[in-house]
Image 1 (spheres, rainbow, N blue to C red):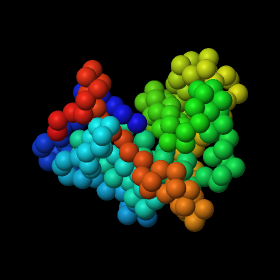
Image 2 (image 1 turned 120 degrees about the vertical axis):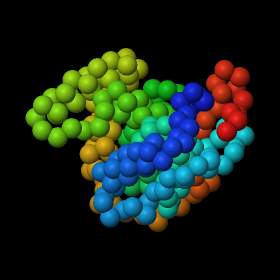
Image 3 (image 1 turned 180 degrees about the horizontal axis):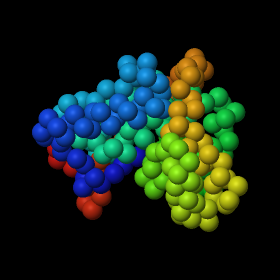
Image 4 (image 1 turned 45 degrees about the vertical axis):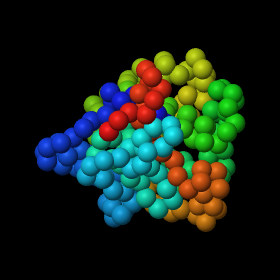
Amino acid sequence: MAVSADELNIRVDDEEQQSFSNAVDKYFKTVFGEDQVGLWEVLQKGVIQRLPTGYAVGECTTDLMTLSMYAPESAAWHEAFHRVTELLLTEDERSVFYKIYQDKYGVSDPRSVAEGLADLFVDYTSRVGLPKNGKFGKIKTFFKSIYAGIFVVRKLGIKDTRKLFAFFNDINKGAYRTRTVSKENEDRFNRLFDGYLHYTVTNQTTGQTVDL
């Protein structure tokens, strides 16, 4: 995924940095479990690496999710989605969501599908928010999901939108936290993605990489 430079957060003071780190920890612990803290890290400054397509501020590998301190909060959602979809789902489960995207958006390249699905998940989470506890919170989430659905149902149809949104909600609730990475998924990830998926930042006006 590529985001514009104005979505960066150059967090310089200790309070901002600690707040971001705490938010990332809380989200990843919800999705992957309290005992899985070794699955992610937040770099205290700088970017992960410079790529031809931009600066990487988020990265998912088979072993680790890494975020730059400059990354927007949505980068955490993005990398979590990649880990669940590419490394924790079975091939049969994943193929359902891949087929939805491939059929509706006309793309077949696995990296493009993986990033496109992640973009839909980030958009869903930004519109609906993270799951809330209690009856009122669940009702609020329900109505927000209807609002979010308006933006994709014309493309995907009601049935496929409901499938995707149920999956998205399950991720944010931590429904896959007890799963482990299979050798089959690890080999597939390394083969299709050369070992990593990145969240990059570009200047989308000029198309050039931003200076950080």
